[in-house]
Length: 268
Image (cartoon, rainbow, N blue to C red):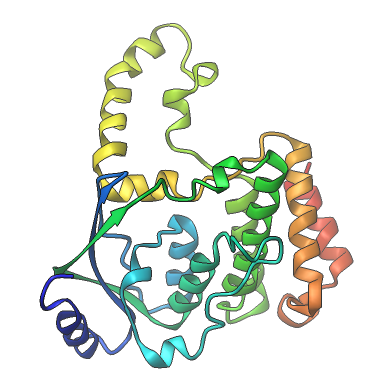
């Protein structure tokens, strides 16, 4: 850490009393060379912060200074249902809880340097497609629990419920059009895109926000109706477990109706 790292973040926390986290720049060396400045969450509205957190699923603030009162109001870092030795996504669930409680403030100046000994999430990349599907769906269920609870009305909570399903069942990869030959623009389009693809490759290697947003959480992509149906089934099974999520209380609907509606929309 830079010599005044903690002091700088403490001073920022005092300056921004609504901040749940004050965090600084992280520089990685070793296996990868990358600078991470993250996605600040500065809205006064908890719903806006949580939805932005869901959109980017950026984890840069995880190494920042967390306000004790906010920390005490979270569930902490949970063990996953499917593999407690991995707990894929637990920090993302934790950060989304914190986003509901306060702002994420980036503090220029202090610096944290880290040496990466191996590729992030390299163990996840060795999983089978079924294991990746399970891990992605379990994270989706976690995010439903946290994101939906930020809504103030049943209608708002339902919109947030749908937003999570869109994020996990219908992922959007901004680079796919430029790297997948099957989806390139026909005929002259491929030639036109050549210099653009070069720029995108440069951005992916050197721009910290682009790398974080585009690559970190793309564990599994539902490419077919069967994939979406399987993901949705696991998400509902996890939400029902131990009564962790009750639609009658937060969405004013029943499990049967909720499953029917979401299946028609997302698994069709």
